[in-house]
Image 1 (spheres, helix red, strand yellow):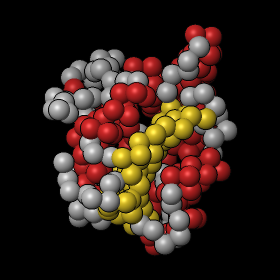
Image 2: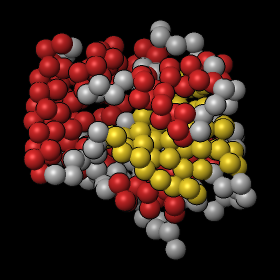
Image 3: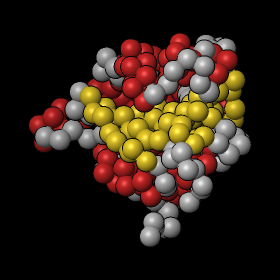
Image 4: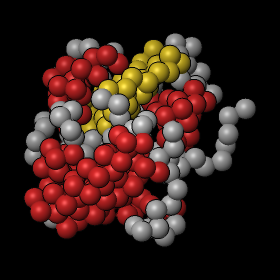
Length: 252
């Protein structure tokens, strides 16, 4: 039987918030305060995986012209922008719990935008052809609850795509990654953007180091009722989790 206990993506990070219940308020606040700098930070952080990578993975996950797509935790619209190039801006809706991020996205993209969080999607059952989430799974409260909600809103036969970054496999590569993402990127973000941007990147790195394993994420997706669950890894650390909502889509 699937587990019913809460399944956070990582332990409480007490350097940033005190309890699990404080996580959402901290995440919303830090993204609100860094929204206007986020694209600048991302250029430092992304290690060359820009729009071309997002666009390629969206296509590999099954997105084609004319399909509806909900981009959860859309931020400034980095994934939504590439989705709009494939399916048309009128078919893409971005959702985020940060008003600051939505305001920044609104200045960049002509797509529908919704203020909400990943576990409470204001979308009808089987309401979208595809759901995407870019580098934000580490910021949700509960993997099981989040995936159950994703399963609810994707139509039978529809697709799920979650982009994430994880730990490197070798100790040497992980040490290099820790130095770059844990020290260099926060420092450069503080110089190029703001003190809050430095804090965000320190937090970002800690969530990467403390996140549950890819196998755990794949298991949770299967427990939520998704089929054809798989993971594609690029450059050793960039993971694309892909899955489908079964055609006989009675909710579990």
